[in-house]
Length: 241
Image (tube, rainbow, N blue to C red):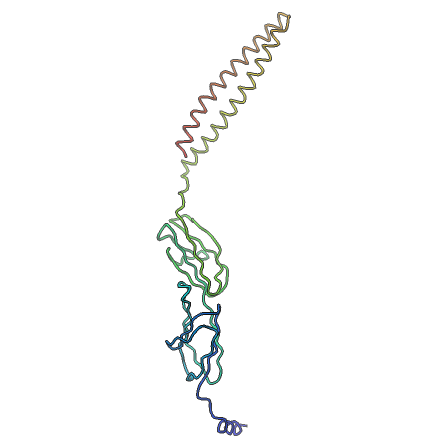
């Protein structure tokens, strides 16, 4: 059998060159072979000397997509190669220098570009100081460019300010309850006074008059408290906001 193989080489000739069939994901990427541009993938380059060769694929349209560089040993015959461009994440934030974390691990500071080859979902976050200001999921698809722009976020309220706002809200609720109670008592005072005017029994008249006067005093006091509380609550709200 070995002799037949040598006889076949003598008749057909030993291959002196090699061919490269190159496809990319995504397709349409530009191809360089040993520093020479050959066109857009998919393509086939013929007559390459066997041995180690430098292959680069890149995209001029998407400037942020990282080029793929590899060195391959090409043997005689047809070599089929498929290269995948990484997915790229471009993070830009108003807070320059904000820390960017990937799955809880810090990968750099904004502005930042992160390239990943595997299409696996990743948990991204941006932290300013000890505060997480943005959180999202990113799946790097081949040859894709994802830009995340983070605008300046309002600072969270301090505990003291939050307490002030809470107290202002409670004060407003209290004064509204005082106004409602004042209206109810004033209505009952009017009803008692109307009944006092229509009754002829002396003891009943005295009881109704006293009740009307007592309810009217309560209604007036609650209304005064509502006016004062409303003014204080409004001023408190303005100062705490």
